[in-house]
Length: 104
Image (cartoon, rainbow, N blue to C red):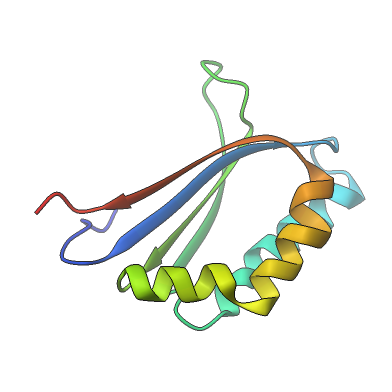
């Protein structure tokens, strides 16, 4: 894992889909999620599966940005806005989002 430093922002979300694992709907959703990595400013994107039984979230995504301005530009990018409106709100049953900056 890359150490978070300077003004970098790590955007992390854990979530559970409304669709069964491996279903065509889940596969299409995850492909659309991964495509967000093509948005300017996204320097790294990783989609992962939860392996611990300690929580109900089954999947996760983490992205890194050079700074808060790049993260905010991503949040307002038309492709991200459309993904949230058209895919996320319809396909995600529950989620928790955490955005990190380095301590110092």
